[in-house]
Each structure stands twice: as structure tokens, then as C-alpha cells.
Amino acid sequence: RTISGSFNDSTATQVYPGAFCNCSKLTSVIFPSCSSVGMMAFTSCTSLKTASFPKCTKIGSSAFESCSYLSSAYFPELTTISSRAFSGCTRLTSISFPKLSRVSYMGMAGVGASSIYLPKLSYIDMYAFRNCTSLGVLSLPVASYISTYAFENCRMLSKLYLNSTRVCSLT
Image (cartoon, rainbow, N blue to C red; front, top):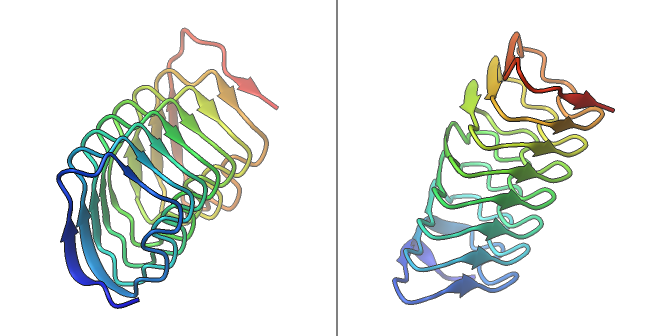
């Protein structure tokens, strides 16, 4: 694909599946009015560094998978991360998901953040944070379900903060 540099679309209300897939020269995306990102929309955009979606509530499967240079993701209204949405975003260190309530299968596998605070996250699916090898501190004050292998190979994870008044189901 030939799209390069920054892309800003203030009128789009959704990004269709595969819309920017493999745009290897795309460096930044801003979609102020977008409420959903389709599956594989930005998969393998290997130069993408920043993504800003102030009104987005849902991200489809593999939407940002293998965006290896993505370092900042701003999604203040995001409630659901579908499977593999940020999988392989090894440089993703600045994460703003204050309303996130669900991370699906491998949704954030391999992200590079060392500390993550997700105040509304209640459901964590299998392998959700797999291979987050830099993750040392994870704060999940309302987590009610944590699936098996959710933190597989998170070698640095030394502090997992959960709300002590809630019972957390580990299966």
C-alpha cells in the first residue's frame, strides 16, 4: 500500500476490516469520530507508532496485530479488545484504556508495557497478556474473571493488584 505518514480522518465513524492492512509506511492515525475498528484494520502496519481513537468502544480481532512499532494507543472509551487485537505490539508502552472491561483471547499478548492500570477491566480471557515479558506491575481493581494462562510467560510480573473485596475466579 502507498499510504504513508500520518492519517487523520475526522468524519469516519468506523474503520472497515483490512482498511489499512500492511500499510508499512503509515506512522500515525487519528480518528476522532470513529466508534469501531474492524478486524485486521491495521494489521502489520510496521511503521505505525501512534493510534488515537477518542470515541472508539470496540476493536475487532487482529486490528493492530503485528504493529511492532506501535508505542502509544489512546482509546479512552474502549470497552472491548477482541482476540489478538494488540498481539505482537512489542513496543506498546503508553496505553490509555480507562473504560476497558474485557480483553479477549491474546488481545494484548506481547505488549511492551512495564506497568498497566486498567480500572474497569473485569474479564480476562485465555492468554490475554501472554508474552508480555516487560510487564512487572498490573493493577486490575475490579477483575472478576481471569482465565487460564492469562499471564503466561510474563516473566517480570511481580505485582498483581486486585481489589481485596472481590473474589477473583481463576480457572
